Each structure stands twice: as structure tokens, then as C-alpha cells.
Length: 433
Image (cartoon, rainbow, N blue to C red; front, side, top):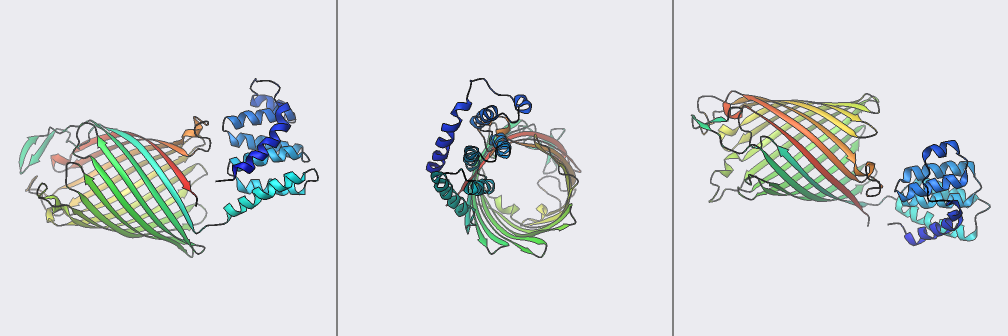
């Protein structure tokens, strides 16, 4: 944290100077500023109003303009410096400090104050070996077919047709928290260690209520024009009414630019999944599997607002019981729109799943094959755009999403449609040592 005792000295000095600028309690509009851009008292009051609302961007813009109009006014520079420090803009703050140090109107007290702040800013700007980040997330989703019930509500069980009575509509609430530590290694490399805990609860059917624990490590580096990451992950899913499951993941990913607008990416992932075989869940480990997946992708930035992403993927899962073996071919497309008012991403994925053996617990006369299409749209926006007083630095992110999946299969159990709506809130914190 900055030394707020020093900052308060600046604010006190500027308060004494600018108190006379408050002629009335009536709010100053931006139109009035456009009509009188050089009116010192009017502009100062407008900057103060914006600062009280937490709109540091507008406050800084106004003060920077006044600093250009009145380059010899040391009080304006001091006021601008105090706002820049509060807004965590060290580069601009150091520029203003340099101006104050060169000013003939700066007092000895002014120079001592800015010297202390300059040292603190430079210490903070100096790269540290370790950095720490924490995150908190909360969300809920509403699904109209949470159990993937077939379109006809009929399904096969051991070659016989049954009526499926599983609930379709349900709400799910989830919360998670994570802590990450990053260690710099030289100029181009870093090591990441991250731990997270999550909890997910359904309202109607509690069979999928689960607590999750994940530990992730990665080594990121640059070789030539390529960014490369070697990663590993261990996770445990502690189901309330089902067997616990464990998975270990390791892989390699990379990307490289091509021209000014294109970026190509690739990855390989190895997954080892296991179920906790116990007296209550005697068949849990029948789906123990070793999985391999390969993906390639292309990102294209058409403009500063519009970008696209496309990807091809292949994966195979080799299970303990052969009837669960399958392979998947997938094609994905996304359109990303980085509007000033929100970030919107629209995606579509087409997946082809082919199993290798019949599943006798479902239908022994046919090997399952299916194709699914998933459409989704995601909207992201900082809370500070709505309520700058609550989130002046726009660190709280809101998300809205919708997705719909249509699955068509040669076995009626897997012929279904499902859609869901979700809302989420997330907040990250930089933990500075």
C-alpha cells in the first residue's frame, strides 16, 4: 500500500488552496466545462465532484488539462499528483513529480513531500521476484434440462425402453476462491503455483453437489517468438452423494504470432482420471481413464473491437472398461466484440463422439455415436461502469451467459436438448508483500 500519511499531506495542502473554488453545492455539468474550459474555479470544482464519485479518469483528465493551461501553478500539480497516486498511476505520477521538482514555485516542503512519494513509487515499480493474487467468485445458473433427459423422455436400460423421470429444471449455486503465487525467473520466464477451492450446490436434485480442490503449477517461458507453457494439475471432486473422483493433468501449450493480426496456438494434454471404488459405489472405478487431447487454434484481430478465434481438437479416452472408450473430434468458432460498454463473446462448437464398443447397460446391439452442437454467448462488464462509488477502479467483474446444446445420437438416451442461463460475480486482489 502507498504511504497514505504522505498522501494526506498533499490533499491537505491542495484542500487549503482549492476550498475557495467551491462557490456552491450545485453540480457542474460537462457541458459547462466545454463552454468554459479555462475557468480555473469551475474546472477545479468539477474535478472535485468527479473525485468524490470515484471517477478518477475524468478527474485526472480535467487536472491534466488545467496543468497545461496553468503550467506554473504548483497547487494544480500537487492536486494532480495526489489523484494519480490514489488512482495507482505511478508512471504519470513520476512525470508530475519531475515537473514539480523543476518548478521555481515549489516550496521546500513541497519538494520533501514529493521526494518521499517518488522513492516509494520507484520502490513499487521495481520488479519483485514474487507476486501474489487472490480471487473470489460467486455465481448461479438455471438449466432447463440439467440431467440431459432425452427429447421423448424415453431411454434404454439393458435393451429395454424406460420412461425417464429425472428432474429437468434446476438451479445451481457455486462459489470459489483461489490464491496464486508467481515467481519471476529471469527476464522471460516465470513459475506459477495456484490453489483453489470450490463448492457447487443444486436446489432440487442434490446428487451432483460437489466440493472441489485444485492445485495447479506451470512454467512459462519465451523461446524466439514463441510463448511456451508446461503445466500440471491435480484435482479432487468430493461429491456429497457419490464417489469421490481424482484427476491428474499434465501438458504443454504454446503460441506464436504471424504478422500483426494473427496468432496461432497449440496444446497437448494428458489426463489420468480415477473414481473412488468403495462399498457404496462399487462401479465407480469402471470409468477410470487415461485421456489424450490435441488442439490447434488461430486468433485474428480484425480491428481493435472485433476479433475471431477458431480451433480444431481431437481427444481420446481409454477407460478401464472398454465400453466406455471413445474419441471426439471438435471444431470451435468464436466472435469477440470488445465494445467500450461491454465485452461480448459469441461461440459455436460442433463435436463428433464415436464409441468403440456397445454399452450393454444401455443398448448392446448398437455402438453409440452422436454429434452435438453448442451455441453460447457471454457478456462481461465491470460493476464500476454502473456504480463507480462501489467499484471506482473497476475490479469487480459481472458476467452473463447463455448456452444451448443440441445432441443427436443413434441411441435415444443421448438425443436431447438443453439450455442454461448463468450469472457470475468475480473479484481479484493483488496481495503485495
